[in-house]
Every structure is written in structure tokens, then in C-alpha cells.
Image (cartoon, rainbow, N blue to C red; front, side):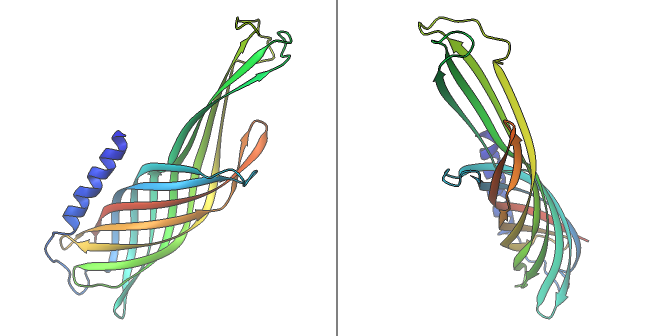
Length: 245
């Protein structure tokens, strides 16, 4: 909740700054190299491909990023290429409890209870885009398309408790662990597209807001002795500042 409030506060402050500043655009205001930094919110979902009947896992998170690029003029348009790295992103935590009865080394009345906690987390993403914009004075709306690679983690912990039919504790055999921890990372490759608007705050500084959607292909996570396949998608809304050289 704290991260969400901080992200929303930064977004609101940046929007207020971007849209009330005086004009600074000149003939070459949007061309040349630049570097930038941003903060934003990421909304996404994960689809379990081993069984597509499962509902997608909805995820949310915050991300900070660094970027850089180069723009040039082409008639009335600005065309450019840029790269960006985002740290953080969408995630989800969930827990479940399952109970099973039967013979598990403690007698026919043994009951096993599985308490499972799982975390789905994006660690980072790296993207490259081609951009085209149309300057309108101090503002430049733009669209972009590109490719993205991202790293995700599934972290799964299961605690197993045993009880007898009467509810009392029983002896646990050495071959039955009481705590099972599994963790797996995977790289996803995706295609991105989005829109944004940039506004000159001074001769060298500009602010921007943009939205980007990325569709990732499926990748395998090694858990419980098997490959679990997930496909992902994410929508990022971010605000930031660019410094133009």
C-alpha cells in the first residue's frame, strides 16, 4: 500500500509540473541525444499454459526506470530510437491450504495439511523502441513500437503438518519434509507498443507521460520436478523527465 501511495503521489506531482510549464520549444528542440528517468505503475496478468482453463493471475506493481535515445527531424515529424531498463514491475502474492488423508508413514488415520505461499514477481525489463512524434509547439505527442525482454520469478514455499485421526500429533518419517521451498526464474521475450506526450520544461529539460502494452511469449519455470509454462502481458503507465544534450 505504501509503494502504491508513493507511486501515485509522484505521478500526480509530475503531471502538475508537465502541464503548467511555460514554452521553451525551438526549431531543434526535439532532436539530438537525451537521457531520462521515470517512475510508474505496471498492471499485468499471467496465464498458466499447462492448463489454459485456469483463470489468468492478475498482477500489479511499481517500477522505476532509466532510458536514453536519439531523435532526428524528418519533414514535420520527429523520428528516433531509444532504450530503457525498468526495475521492478507487476507482482502477486497468494496462499492456499489443502488437506489430504491416507497412509503417510504414520498410520491409516494420518492427515497431511499443505500450507502454500506463492509469489509471482517481475524483477526487471529491458526494451528498445522506434518512435515517431509530431511536434506541436512545446508539446510532442508520439507513438512507438519495439521489443522487450523481461525476467520473472516464481517463489513457492509449502509447509506440511501431520496429525492423527483424533487430532493429536504423530511421528513424521524422515522422507516427508515439513518445509519445501522452490524458486525458479525465466526470461520472457515480448513485443511492445504505446503512446505518449512530451512537454518542454526548459531548453534542456522535458517531461513526459506514456502508456505501453507488452505481450510476452510463454516461458518455462522448473517447479516440483516439471516445467510449468506461463505466458504474460503487461501494461505500464509512467511519467518521467528527459535531459536533452
